[in-house]
Image (cartoon, rainbow, N blue to C red; front, side, top):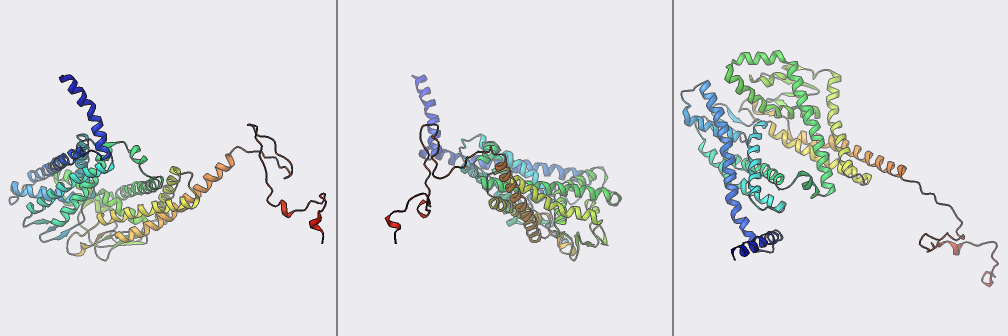
Length: 463
């Protein structure tokens, strides 16, 4: 009897799961009941792992350079502040002002933790569609935002204070995006996820991603070349700081975390608007005007004083990179949809370039920020200028390349199509029978308007 009951129960389970997926079985509430607990547990695990990593770094720095007023409680508060900085939360520092130019590379640490948190939640549940993936992301993001807000309150001290509203919003945003991608990847492969999208949306996203990848690689290469050309200044700043062995390692980690910011600044330079390093300063292709800068080795790649932008050929080459990125994005958009019309391909290319411009504007907004209340209150590129210029340059170049590629593709299809020999016959000549024994009848629509000279006129033609 027990074996029969067990077998029948096992047979009912797949049917129950299918019913839950269709929404016709109220038993689907089991997922809604257990999902909040699983999401809260995953959020606590991800936050604890990131906080532990920050605590280890702070303790290493405290041991290398002990501060009598810090103590273990101060080290824990500092680690909490750095954890919030990793989510791009601004900090108000006593005697310096608001610090908002934060390292973008540090976001990778909580992002990776939340990625794995989303995967772990999906693996433990019966996920059947994108809606439930979004539910998983919300289940993790909401408690994660609460944790970020609590840490913003507990980490307050006389030295530094993190912004509570920004901690909640940034914690929720980072957690939702990273968890959603992790849960979606655990649910199915990227190819199957792309199959759920329409052809138009897919081509626009691929166009934007291709252009953004080229600009990101160009920004990294430009940053590396600038550092190589200013090797002496870079070494001089290191010698001025004298960080020691442990301090040099921590300083290197800080510079690596700021590399995405530097790459975004380089992209803003290629687009044309450039960026600022303090109030009344600018670094652009037309020239640079800079004043005294903080003693940070990565800033040694910037010119000092009033200088020209550089060699004309080099600057001209850098200015063509955004157009090249737009052209590549347009070609990728047409490759995914080769049957689209010429105007449709141009519209998709422009939308892809505009989407890439919007993403660059968001990155520019997060790559800069204030470094205090003084002259360095404005640091980094202008978000709206980068977004506007990138939309025009990338959108127009992608539209032109996509339209040209679509025209060339349609032309090749017509020229490579097997030729069909059609014999020209008079309208009155009967056509040969078809293969299935039928006949094709040709109707001359203008037969009533034509007069054959061989046909005798009837009474209707008399005056």
